Length: 95
Image (cartoon, rainbow, N blue to C red; front, top):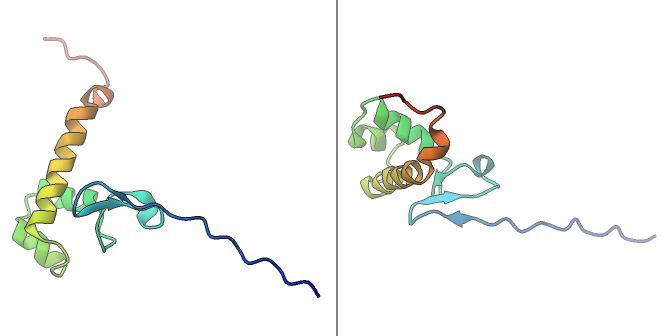
């Protein structure tokens, strides 16, 4: 009998978006998460937008985040908005 070949694993590349934020195709479909977690950056940004304090967010995620990690996420969101504003504007506003 001939042995079946082992399944070849495709290497997964983790993209470091910063010190704390990563995008890994094997985790949360490649959406930006906080390194070492499955906490989506978009979820934390939504919590900030809803008025939660950073301390409350850290507590909500059981200490898996730090203020530095949240700050990096906010900076990355800011950069993305500045870089992609033209793509986000659907129609020009008449003045």
